Length: 245
Length: 181
Image (tube, rainbow over the protein chains, first blue to last red):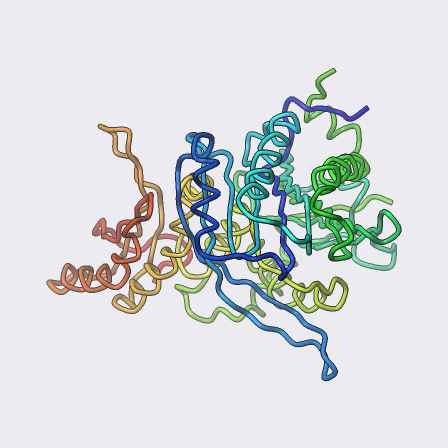
């Protein structure tokens, strides 16, 4: 049974659908999508983001950076948004997290609206990414008291860390999906400690999930993300997050 | 085994001394943890990510990550007042994420000698707030207003059709803090 918290540490959750190049896409798509979403997401905005593409060629890894324009549709309270870019759709929810009951219907709405606007030929990537900020009321913190995922430091090494980054990638569904988990410390003010725990569950095999299966994949991804999150924290944090029974 | 993390302490000095920031105005507001995390993320992390987690495409679609990246970028150039209020403001007006670096660069170009300070200004009379980028100088002369106008002209057009605002101005105060000139 998944746990639900009154004070979840989630600062953002992002569900991303990236379509395969066979899907026809043109400049009218964001407008078509906005027509379908504007009741729930009335506020329009746009921004440029830098996207890095890595391709493996005979001469090694080739890196290319390009700018893409994202059109953003926000809810009136600016807590939930849909982003549309070339063959890209994301649904983001910001703090306070509306729980899965509130996030999932927005994902369904955006995905179904996209499918109604264009013919999606395939999915290159789907991901469900949760970003947690966990604030502890002290500067010196015993990580093991709060976390079950943190860097292991051998006894012959200095025991006082001033910064760290820890990341692993797990395999699920016979390698079809991967879950990347990252844990680091980020700047905080006022004598507190702030940690970022990233859980990014994504389709690692492009095309392995058909468009018709996408929402079922997202539901499954959410279950895996919950398991990973619970696997990363101790009861002490669960108490802080105040489980709703 | 228990692993302990400490934020402050004399051992940090070695990192700070070895940091690439040689000019006072380049020092971040929170030199310790920001230099460390920035060094880790920018120098160490990307190469590890490429090796350990090769992916066909990267690029953040996360509002929170983009804000944090901008905050780190700002911390190397600007004194940050009320970082949490700035984060909150940016999450409401994400269109400004592209404009703020332009504003900071323009201010630095026209006021290379100034300390820059970013804050959220709240109008006490009406429910309005916006970002404000102050230039602070040791000596103010007649050219300040003209230079402010020139700097503002370099990024003002990027604010058109954006929600939210960033105002470049001065409060005629002297530079403050460890990074004061």
